Length: 98
Length: 290
Image (cartoon, rainbow over all chains, first blue to last red; front, side, top):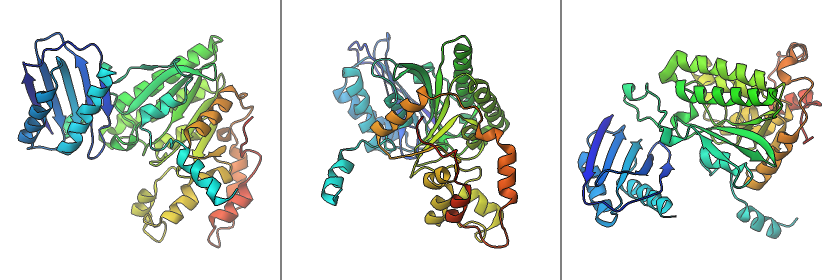
């Protein structure tokens, strides 16, 4: 198991809603996305698969190239592929934009 | 009905099994009446899983929702089968017990609060060992405390099924509702095979497994009350009926003599097959809605 943290200081748009999507089942993960009062966004990942820090970084760099909300994101991961990760994040954004 | 008419109905139906635990529980309630208690943002995670290198889940795989079902106060407790096989650990067990105890307290005070248990579980979470076993004991005792005051309805939809310690919780509940896809049993097929060999039970033989553990057989034997299609509306309708149902004068788990006599009467000199057992055991307990 590995803990990974990222900061995205440029994401400063205020968010009001929170979202919880996904299940920590094989090949899947859960996302908890909620507003933060801090400047910028913070990502905190707990994954049961070690050694993929660079892949996580690439997925979040891409995600925050389009998304600018000041959110705290917590992820519990049971081996989701990068594609699934991005889909779960987009699903969470859909919920907070509702 | 001709096949041409059946197909559109099948396509239109909304599958219950395809929903995750949270959406299953939500789907049972009257719109706008429910709220989740101790949800994922309360972050009641298992402290034991990360110590063993396993990612936890923010709700520990147990979803508690309170609201109204057909106007009656009810609490639904769902185990998420996708997370660690729906296993019951310290936190998920404590959530379940606390919800049942609060329902019992309200019911005793004159505000009848039914409980719906959505069990998709392999039983005790092995990583939490004795804490999981203790949780099962607490859940059973809480079900027993609630059932004289309000119905405790177990719904097993599939596809995980309900096994191990939690099958005991199903066994002591007031009513058990199953789909054809669901399974209910104390020991799961793989456990039996591992302990007694493939001659005893072939865990790769799906037809055999469903013939013994499946919803149709369990209802046929009188060990569950209603067989229901995998359809959100139909399941909702059935649960509504049971939430209003009268309390039972006697529960299956109290019919010790009946079941002892039935087991004693079985002829074990030859292989008992599921169909003949169903014929022998089918009785007044097999349920229609009341």
